[in-house]
Amino acid sequence: MSRPSYLPDNFTLALVTTVLIASLLPCKGEAAHVFNIVTNVAIGLLFFLHGAKLSREAVIAGATHWRLHLVVMLSTFALFPLLGLALKPVLAPLVTPELYTGILFLCALPSTVQSSIAFVAIARGNVPAAVCSASASSLLGIFVTPLLVGVLLATHHDAETNAWKSIADICLQLLVPFIAGQIARKWIGAWVDRNKGMLKYVDQGSILLVVYTAFSEAVNQGLWQQMPLPALGGLIVVSLVLLAIALGVTRFAARRLGFSKEDEITIVFCGSKKSLATGVPMAKVLFPVHAVGAIVLPLMLFHQIQLMVCAVLAQRYAKRTD
Image (tube, one colour):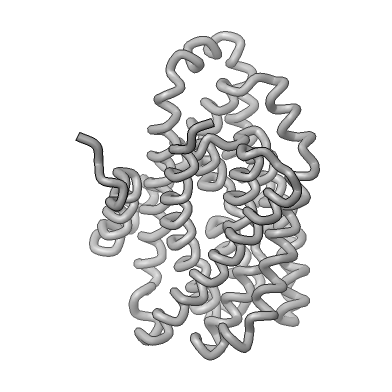
């Protein structure tokens, strides 16, 4: 018997359950360390399998799709900062001044990598272009984000100390497994092609692990204690407004510019997200220690909302008939 269309799909229910478990039973200490390792392994496996799945021609086509990448970069590093400034009369009254500073910091961050690519894969979008675009956004953000923060907040702290480490981490976690999968395609490509269904479970499993570990960290840092309830409600509204505008603008731009449905999916998911993994370390470098908690709180909440909303959107895209 099929599930009624008005009910959430199983993956969305799994996401909600994961958030509830992380709120009630967040991983701490050694358990958190183990979960981080497991999450990194799952993400590495995800990129290895995508590398083995994709032909060399598809990867080259994704890397050379410059119009798509330009739209994603403009959304990430131009649209979001402009929205943060232009909507100040609307956004600022809903939150505290410290939280609004965190919102501007969020707007300056690069796109998230793992979940963007996983959602594009679930939605049957252009995965090679998503790998290139999301990875390039993360690498570029190491240098662009501190500059944008300086412009938006007049912050002049030096973020260069972590730049090379961030690049090394990204290459180690994402590019190395992907390249290894490309090399291994010669031997396992046929087997991967016959078992494409298992990639769905790797995609979804990696997202659930990212949600649990990220939300556990947020809860452990006092997500539900650091702000009054009205400010939390205001922050949810702000996050929804920013995400809705970003999703709407990227979808509209992709269609007006004549991109295919697969490219539209990549633009929408890569151009509407912000990276928690990059944002938290950057905040520790760019801001005083006592201010970091309030600065990253909007990012942590936005991160959870974007995962939940995009999970539903990815399922809707996936159900389309070509």
